[in-house]
Amino acid sequence: GESVGLHLPTLSVQEGDNSIINCAYSNSASDYFIWYKQESGKGPQFIIDIRSNMDKRQGQRVTVLLNKTVKHLSLQIAATQPGDSAVYFCAEKGGGATNKLIFGTGTLLAVQP
Amino acid sequence: NAGVMQNPRHLVRRRGQEARLRCSPMKGHSHVYWYRQLPEEGLKFMVYLQKENIIDESGMPKERFSAEFPKEGPSILRIQQVVRGDSAAYFCASSPPGRNGYTFGSGTRLTVV
Image 1: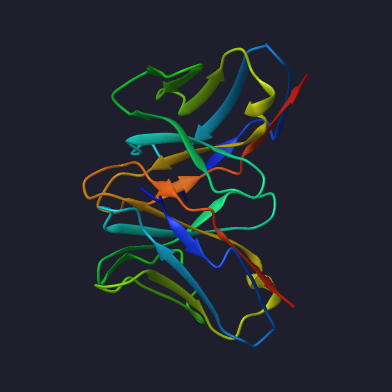
Image 2: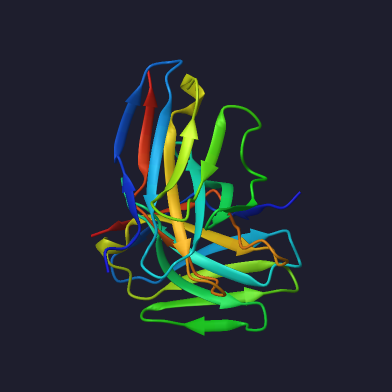
């Protein structure tokens, strides 16, 4: 069945370093991908998205890379800050009429001051 | 713009009672999605609704769970005869027609005792 999985459940980085969070997806028909940030006790917050016709998209301090050949998605955070500490989820939309997103299990990013 | 509003934020029910979770989408958004999140897990899709229509309920348990999005008023997720396994955070998201991005609410944390 469809699934989205993350390689690393926990990532610990030093403040100021760059962070890379990885995600694998299994549905080759997925045409849209999103990264969300979830802080404790809060709802998921949109970070950045990318369509399947793109390989890379940049935002403020964040970059998403999409490798459709190996069905891999990554989120890069530059100059990681303590406020970046949260759980990060990737999600995919599987194409077709339904607009539902399928989420991975999440990666906990812990930023050490 | 008040964002996606969910209430209550916390709900405690005894086994066998009913739980009603409410979601008011963002202004201009006519698509509503409900997700369930167990502790330290990802978000699991439950149901996708448009006004007065259920578009995709493939993630809804077959019994005790129902959802509606009436012409007027909020979307309601209803859980009858709750059991301890229903304890989770329930998130609602909304999107405008024809757009991919979701905006999530802060969730309702249901505890069944």
